[in-house]
Length: 93
Image 1 (cartoon, rainbow, N blue to C red):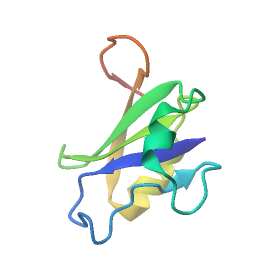
Image 2: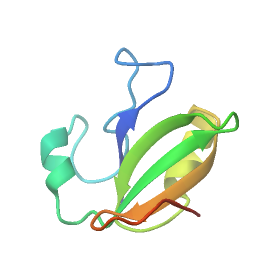
Image 3: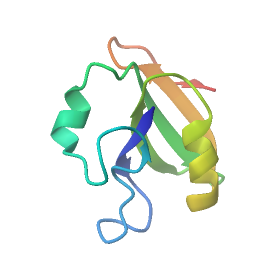
Image 4: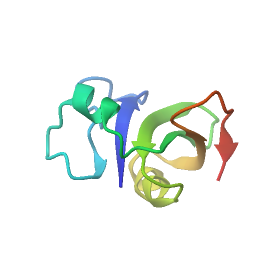
């Protein structure tokens, strides 16, 4: 399960992908509730081929599923993960 929580792409607020993902929060989730849900174990970020940050999100596991979506939507080529709790640095999957 995963969800996009921040969209840094050119779409901005007009075409924001915040809330997209494979999750059970409905079509227009309340992001405050999403952020505090205890099921999330990891934060992720996705970068494009130019190295720019395109998206951040939350996930229940480390997987390529968000990147599989984002490579077609925004041209993302890399996904990094870190645990939700703790002060760990990002690790590329």
